[in-house]
Length: 348
Ligand SMILES: Cc1cc2nc3c(=O)[nH]c(=O)nc-3n(C[C@H](O)[C@H](O)[C@H](O)COP(=O)(O)OP(=O)(O)OC[C@H]3O[C@@H](n4cnc5c(N)ncnc54)[C@H](O)[C@@H]3O)c2cc1C
Image 1 (cartoon, rainbow, N blue to C red):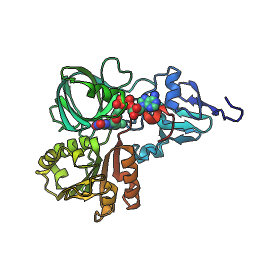
Image 2: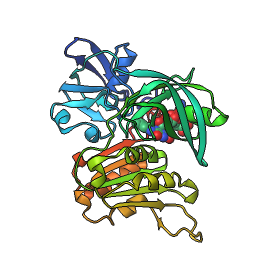
Image 3: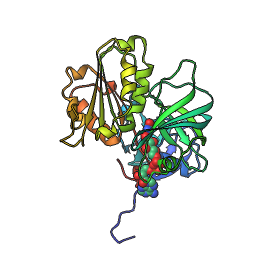
Image 4: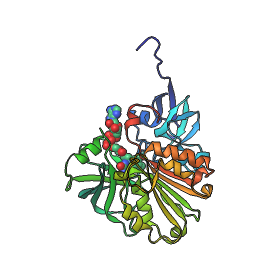
């Protein structure tokens, strides 16, 4: 270590109800330090989405790697809740959490169908050993034998009241990504997967407000599931769906969106927006970033917003939505994070 390189400070984090003490340095999350110590700290996604590691901060101050205000309810926040996977200590802390793994169900799955949706997104259909009950918008953990850590994928099809024996995902290839490089490497039909879930509380909340859905790339998956599963009063809401893609080659599931919204009784507008479409092409629709189009929506502040896709797009859209006056508690999102930011140990 060089003469002037700073050693991260170390703090003691005490779990009130069990008396366990964990030494956590200022660059390590509470969850990581607890797992390193061998504690059965509840967790799933590790990226601030599933809220399984919700913890009460009894005393002390933390630094959040990501703003957790959108995944925690107002009641949680007022009660001092933090997410251990996103929290770095700034001093000695007292926290409280019920140790023991988060309740999960595991299913045996077999890949039964693969559809090329775009040059880098596969539609993956998986038959399960029994029915899974999920709410549209939720996600599952997928893993194959030998993969160290499962990866998160949103359910992409209608959730059936009688449960789904078959589930579908839209999986985008991440260059250098372990799971997706494996999936795309050869025909995986017949391969067994373990499917865990369902997780997350990204889902359509009952309201009469108009809705704005914003998705990028495979962020289409949970929005399509929400649109296909919507019924009753959901259908009376006016809704706008902004779908961001680079070029026409990245657009997909357009017929599915059209079919899903045929039943809509309120106004429904679907607006694909292309950021890198060649100028000379025949594309008659919107060009630019999805975020450019957000500001064109009339009475935006009255909308409830649902966002899914790459973290960069979500963060940019959140800035626009907040500036428009939409209340924080009316914005719901799932950031499609991968492990790159965790490996670097850097905040996103
Ligand atoms: C709630 C949720 C829902 C999601 N739903 C979907 C969905 O429906 N569809 C979808 O396509 N995606 C979805 N995602 C994103 C998806 O989970 C990730 O894209 C996926 O985990 C990538 O897995 P991978 O194994 O291919 O890549 P990873 O192995 O996670 O790698 C990701 C990146 O990190 C880099 N990397 C790997 N190891 C190292 C290292 N040691 N040092 C530096 N860099 C490294 C890789 O090169 C790669 O670029 C979702 C994410 C979340 C959180």
